[in-house]
Image (cartoon, rainbow, N blue to C red; front, side, top):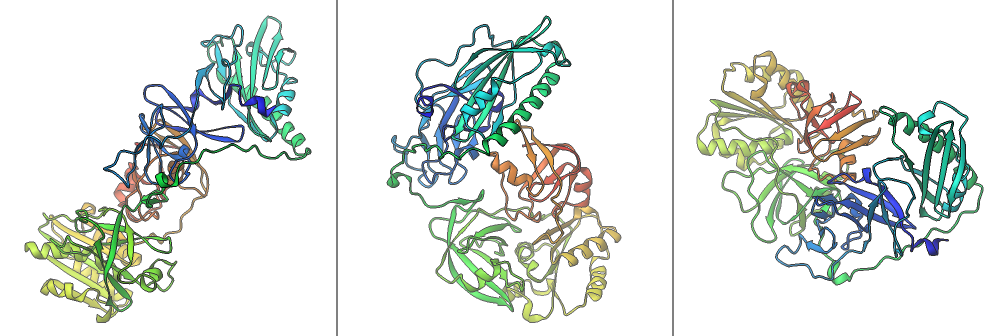
Length: 588
C-alpha cells in the first residue's frame, strides 16, 4: 500500500495551518516537510532540513520571500528553494547547485496537498463546493493508515443541522485506502463528511475531515465540538487496538545529500544566541584576588562600536555562554577588556574562564549589547559598585572623568586586594571612594549617607550583589530619589522562578498564537515557532529579550524592569516572566 501511496496526493496540512510568516512541520510517509506560505500566496513544501548542517527548516524564519535557517542563517528562495545567502561568505553568490529538494503543492478544499511522486490530480469529490465547506481539526492517531481508514467506515455522527439528536442513519458513499465518504441523515437534515487519512509513518496517521453544506449562523462551533468529541473517542479506540498489533518498521525516506565542500561552514550561532565575532585572548592577568582580567582582540578586522555599560556574550570552549561587561575607557576601541570573578559555586562558566582559557586562545563572542546605558546630562552622577559589579560602572566613570563631568565612584569590597583593575581605578583620582570591610548593617548605613542630598537632575548607577542592590534601591526611594533617576544592573537573577503556569501568547505582528506550557519559557516557545528573538543572559537580568505587552497581565519574575515598569504591565522579559492572565498579546 505504501509503495503506491507515493504517487497519490495526500493532505499534509490545513489551509489554516499556514498563516503568513509561519512555517508548518508536515509529515508524510516517513518524510518531514517544511511547509510555508510566501507573501505572494505560493505554498512551498520542502525537505525539512537545511543543506548546511541538516537543521530543521520548520523552525526557520519565514520572511515572506525567503526562508532563513535558524542555525547559521542560510537563506532559501520562495518557489525554487535555491540558496540565496550564506552569512559566512557574504561576498560570494552561492552556487546554483545548493538547492533544497521541493515537492509539489496544491491548495484545495481547505487543505494543502502534496506527494513524493504525484500522478494525476488531487481527489475530486462530486458535489463538494469550495465555499460550502467546514474543515475539521486534524486528529493525529498512533495507528497505521489502513486500520484508521477501516475504522472510519463505521464512524457515526449527526448531520450538522441536527447534532442534538442521536437517530441519524449513516451510509458509506465511497471508501478506499486513504479516503472515506459518509452521508448522515436525520429526517430532512443531511450532511456529507469526507475523511482523508494522511499516512505519516507506518504506525502513525492523521485524520483530516471535511463537512459539506452551509451551516446556519452560530452553528459552526457546536458542529466542530460534535465531531471533535466523536473523532477523539475513535482515536482512543484505534490506539488501544493498534497497541495490540506487532509494530511495523518505520518508513525510510531517502534524503539527498549535498556536497560537503558546499555545506561546511564555520559555526556562527548556537541556541539562538549569535556569536559571529572571533577574538583572541591577547592578555590574561590577575585583576584582583579571585578576579581575572582578559583583553580580547579581533582575529580579523575591527571590533564593533560599543558604549559604556555594554556587555558581550562569551561562548566558552566548554559550550557554556556567559555575559561580561566591557570595562574599556573612552577611545579604547582596539580591544575589549572584561573581568571574570571566580565564583565559589561556579556552574562551570567562571571556572572555565579561570582554568581553561589561556592567552592565545580564540573565543566566539556576540556583538556588544547595551541595556544599561549611561546618561551624560546629569548635574551629578553617583556610582555604587559592589564586588565584580564594578565592571560596567568603571567604563562609565572613565567616560565622565575624561569629560570632566561631576561624579563620585563608591566601590564596596571586603578589602583592598579585592578592588579590581586598580590601575584604572587610580585614574579616577579623588572621585574614587573605596568602601572596605563593611558589614551588611554598616553598608546600609553608609548607603544612606551616600544617597542623602538628592536633588533633581542627579542620577544613580548601581551594580553588585542582589542584596546590596535591593538595599540601595530601597534607601534611595526612602530618601526621595525619583525612580527614573536610579539605574541598576543585576549580574544574575537569584529569585526563585515559578514556571508552573501555562498560558497562551499571541504574537500580534507575526499572526501566531502559541501555547506556553509549564516548565517552558515564552522565549523557548517563540524560538521553536521560528521567531528570531534576541537574548543574552536568559535569566531575567540583562533586558535583551524584553517585549512590549499589548494585552494581558504579566507575571514578572525578572530583576531588570523597575517597579513602575512592572506595575504598568507594558513590558515583559520573555526568558523568565509568565502570565497571570490566560492570554498575553505581545507586539512581536
